[in-house]
Amino acid sequence: MQTKQFQAESKRLLEMMINSIYSQKEIFLRELISNASDAIDKLYYKALTDERLSFDKDSYYIKVSADKDNRTLTISDTGIGMTQKELENNLGIIAKSGSLAFKKENQVEDGHEIIGQFGVGFYSAFMTADKVTVITKALDSDTAYKWESSGADGYTIEPYEKDTAGTEITLKIKENTEEESYDEYLEEYRLKAIIKKYSDFIRYPIKMDVTERKLKEGSENEFEELKEEQIVNSMVPIWKKNKSELTSEDYENFYAEKHYGFDKPLKHIHVSVDGAVRYNAILFIPEKMPFDYYTSEYEKGLELYSNGVLIMNKCSDLLPDHFSFVKGMVDSDDLSLNISREILQHDRQLKLIAKNISKKIKSELQGLLKNEREKYEEFYKAFGRQLKYGVYSDYGTHKEALQDLIMFYSSKEKKLVTLDEYVNRMPEEQKYIYYASGESQERIEKLPQTELVADKGYEILYFTDDIDEFAIQMLMSYKEKEFKSVSSGNLGFEEENNQTDASEDGENKELFDYMKNVLSSKVKDVRASKRLKSHPVCIAADGQVSIEMEKILKSMPNNQNVEAEKVLEINTNHEVFQSLKNAFEKDKEKLNLYTNLLYNQALLIEGLTIQDPVEFTNDICKVMV
Image 1: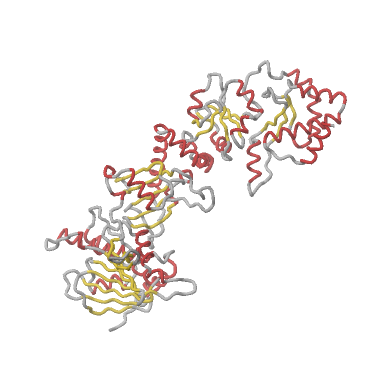
Image 2: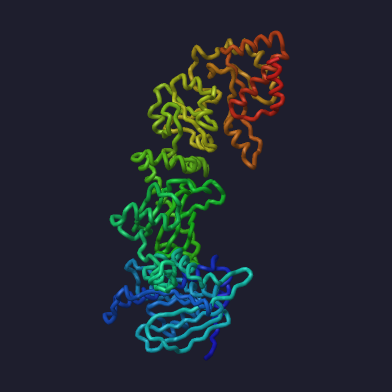
């Protein structure tokens, strides 16, 4: 028996295959099972054109068997088998695909795709095996053959005895090393888990001898272990069944089986597209937020299958960041895969699928908002922050697509409302969409800055998420109505009796200039307030950075000391103002004290940090004394 050498190019490819093409060693089982499925498919196609052959699907299967004692793992099939020539061509020349050649020769269509088209998957076996033995007998052949190889050194082929057509591949599993444990590929539970993960929807039964622990006959507490042959794969994926056959419970069970979450899905979306790109998808909107959702550990993406075989556990390219909460899978026969079937070539098909999925998710959320408001609000409390992040991110690219999905708590309705609902309720004379920012609804309700807007009868949106103001600044307006913070310098009201007129501003200019000088660089200006009614003082912001944005930016790790341009506003109708005027005329030291106290009081109301708490408490003591 002569040892034959792989072609020079094949030898280099085999070395690369073992060391770098596949990211995980467990992939080898997926590849060998996919090849076995192809072998049965080929028999099926032959039966379509050969009247002598009949194809009873129930008679064909794939079997996986482990022998711990001899450290062997065997994958066998009842498929078409290989001739000596096919062994030479398919296993002697790496990257020459017998499946692809068969597909071209037989013009395979019928929606019944053959999986393996690269001719490299078989060699992934060498990642876990010291030696690979293939025993095969081709359909209608009298002779079987054994192909054997220990890797890059070459291979042998010799006649062999085998009763039926099909192929049996036996791997001599490597011994454990300090870095790797190869024992796992002989463990029943581990093999079953790998099959379920990657090959659960192979269309033929995958059988294993599974150990069952059963109560001994006539005994109450004695057990015995029995080996039973079981089918471990589901075969027919849920996404290829008619929607009319499926119930909500079927989708919930699939959600649980795939470990998409510990909750129940709030909504499922079943998509079947047979157009320029064919694909099936089942998507889920979760009920609850995963514990790690807003952490760097969370990984977005959908499971991606090619012809029922899992090729990526998390395909992030299928979901935009603002829909990263969506769970589920996509299966397509039209994807361009790379040689290892683990990574996608970024092509038009993938982008088209992703675009369609995004539209479908948006449409489903809009339907939920319109028809099942309570469910949508439940969803929004978990994932609304992510939608607002989507408005802000990518320089506002997605803001128009998301603006009708975002909601805020309303001062009038005392519940979450959409921007559309707010604008439709606006009085005719109202120019702006008013909002107030704070850490909670309770704190915002106590803000002095809300007094005048609320007194006008205008609705105020409460911004309590750190992303809210950033998102609204990116949105700028909604239905031609600009957003306006209740803390902004100009609220957009016409001059009214309760506002300070120009003569009063001039009369108090010296006092305000003096107070501004006392506060030095802490404020941009001190002026009479046009928004306060019962409160004596507040801080307003000039410019694009609000007080709330300053707090958020300062809490970030890369804090660059971005600050809002603060204005101290004084209520000239409050009795405190008379004390300020008296102190200005008679006791400048007391005015200095009052000015610092009012400034620190305004900071506390806003939830900002007082720069010198000791000085503040000393000032309070001075007033008391």
